[in-house]
Image (cartoon, rainbow, N blue to C red):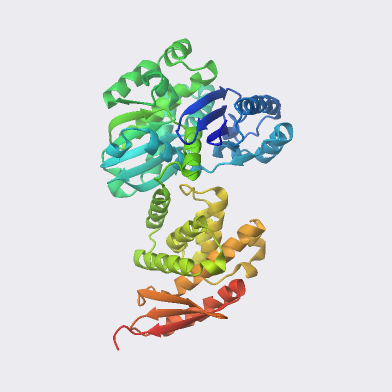
Length: 509
């Protein structure tokens, strides 16, 4: 087969799935799903059962044979974020590698949300019309729910909630063994979790009606979406009627009516109760069911990476970073100026750092969020920034990229990696060098507005034989900035071997 074909395998909590697509045309050639469930008990803090490894390995070998039968040479295997959170996930990954030769790359929740957003934007015909006004993409994962809010064609916020159908199913199983009215208790449990999550959203999002794009709701998709279609639009009244029909139904009815397996019938009630609550809190106008999942997102992302789509989605990543900064009340004027200076320095210093455009994006994100730790305490805020960022699922970023941004934020102020080696060694050597270079650039940019007064609005950069001259255009007194610059410049010299020198040029003589 031509090199345009790509095979994607996703190992999830409740299934393993293969998709072979033509990246150039977007046509799906093959789709195969195995019901091997190797991680359904992880939300009870149980390890993955080693007895299922043989079944998973057999399924993966079968998928690999299909890939070879199609003559596809370009393929990858991913594991879901939920699966990677199991206590023995790394052991399982290694066992599967030994048995199949396939290496599983763990996804972050932010990556899963991002690639699904990409798939929806490129495959859903109504997408552009929906996001013109107010719309929300709600994505159901096995153990979590993601909400991405759009207004005027732009992403304005992205949040993750640790509540998903399989996690709820396990709660229901416990309730049935302990509570006299388990469904009522489960409904209250979902309501409390969603309300607690939703109160942290910006006030304008809490009160705005939205068109809803819902993905991952398998029972609804099976019932409403016609075969060979990827979407279906229904009213809220249609959904309420459906929820009443299935809430008290027998398992036999659900299996036949919703075309789901007996193994998955216990997820119907959790999905219905969760969606019902979510539609209420987001003030849903209409519900657009979309039969796309993370696997579709991964193949779409691969097509974008291969250059088959002109539209790129980095602005969603930056918008989510801006949303995170606003959530932690980062001072916007200082943040914007540091972002501007950082990118200017990065672009002017390309012959020195040899970093990639992806590294430039990471620097821009770090410039946006480096001060979020000040929300906790301004004293040693950089340490708090590091902690908060590590605990954040940032849209579109891998776990490693999140670690890089957290480390760059940690070292933007007073500490350096050389002084904090034990903490710094969590990353591979090549990534440590990226952190060092980005930190050195961010430190200079931050120093140029150390007083948070925006006394410098413009800089120029000149690279000399043994120094870098940064000319600041300002009529103000820059004594504090000079002191901060000279202090923070030493690390830049350590990393690049050139001494930064700050000069001032007055705008009005």
